[in-house]
Each structure stands twice: as C-alpha cells, then as structure tokens.
Length: 280
Ligand code: SF4
Ligand code: SF4
View 1 (tube, rainbow, N blue to C red):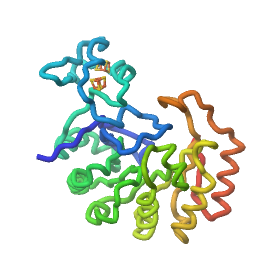
View 2: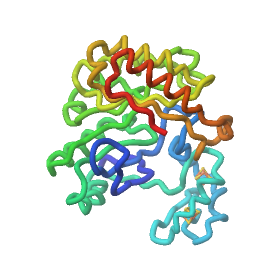
View 3: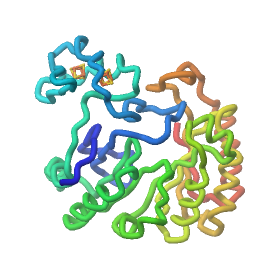
View 4: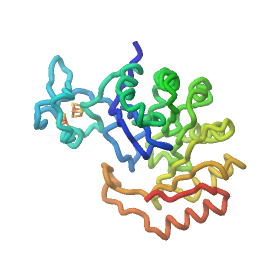
C-alpha cells in the first residue's frame, strides 16, 4: 500500500490555483529556504518527544520511542510546532491516495480541483500520480505546486494527468540559489522551466522578492530568455517577501517597498510578461 507523509489536507483554498480547490500539503522538503513560511513542513519528526509535555490538550503521547498525535483531541494551538527546533511536526499522517480522496470527496460540490503542495510534493511522484488518477476520474483538475528540483521530464505520465505546475524560481545565480535555499544547484529548476513551457504545463511562475537576498531582476530576465515566446501567456507572480511565519536569519527582515516591487513589475512588462502581478 502506497502512503505518503501528509501535513495537512486543506478542504477549501482560493490561493492555490484557479477556482476553489482542496490543497494537500506533503511533509518533507529537499530545500530549506531562508524565507520559508511553513518551515514545520520541511523535515520528518524524529520523535525526540520535546513537544509532548507542552501540549495543552494531551493530544501528544510518546510510546515505544514514537510520538503519537490524536487529531480528535488536538485543539490546533500549534504549540508543538513552535517548540520544535527541527522544522518538523508531530501532526503528520501517513495516508494512501484513497484515504486523501476520501477526505476531499465531501468537498466535491464546492471545488474545481486539487493542488498538491508542501513541503515538496514532487518528492512523491508516483503517489501524486495515483492521487491525480483518482481525482480526474471524479472530474477534478490537478495542479502541482513545486520548487522545481525533481526532474519532471522523467515523469511524462504525471504531467499528462495534471493541468500544470506552479513553479518557484527562487534565484537565477547559482551562489544566490545556494544561499537562499540550501540547495546545491538550480540546474534542474531551469530545465523544468524550459520543459514545462514547451509542453504547455507551466501554470504559474513565482518569485519571492527580497533585495539583497534574491536576484529578482536576474530571475525575471533569465525566465524570459528561457521560455521565449511563452512569456506572454504565463502568469508571473512577484511575491513581496513577508516575515510572517519565517524562522531563522530573515525573521525580522523588513519587506521590500512598493517602489522596488513596481520596478520589478515594470521590468517584467518590458520583457513581455503580460500576466505579471505583484502579490502583497
Ligand atoms: S515534532 Fe519536533 S519536537 Fe516534536 S517529537 Fe517531532 S522532532 Fe521532536
Ligand atoms: S497543535 Fe500540537 S500542542 Fe496544540 S493541541 Fe495539537 S498536538 Fe497539542
């Protein structure tokens, strides 16, 4: 039986692609971005038990070296997330695609599709394929939200089952990419960018903008050069960095000002991104 670690199934979301969607957040990421807004999805729990005693409702217990979570008792205060220094969560469930769909099914009258997010959902490509097969059989559209580090050219059947990928392009220069993500190379991200544009599966591109940390101007130019004539059709989101939820060295960093964001938007327009927007 195929299972994957799931941090959360959000029944209704308006920010994870077009229309109302259910979003599935996978646990585990191969990057550790300095500006990550949900760092508790980065790592798997190693059952140290530090979070157990602070749980106000008794939803956490430790037995046989494992921390167990009782969702029936949990009051979702997130105290366990705040005390975990490993960027993990004890509230992770190992679910099959069928079990996930069972949770989504009750939303069918209200949703247009599903989006897999994370963590990094493409670390589980075969699992996602199974989930998308079930979702499509029920008339739902399917989107992947990804950091682009899994070589999607190796998964044509998965891409065939989804409407598109919402791709994060976090930096263009290799050193900048390593500094902001902890990842070794963005070569695969660039390969995916080109491939997804060529096969019409690039749903959206996202850049988190923070001068001094992210080379947003270089990212915009690099994307334009890589996707060529597709530049006019693709949605480009210029996301204003916000420190809410961020842990570590950027947690007190101020957001860029409107003038800077408008300059980036202007650059994007000049390069032909007709669907570029600023996300505040
Ligand atoms: S969630 Fe964090 S603090 Fe709690 S048991 Fe797991 S690793 Fe330890
Ligand atoms: S969110 Fe964590 S600490 Fe709060 S009640 Fe649930 S398990 Fe306990």
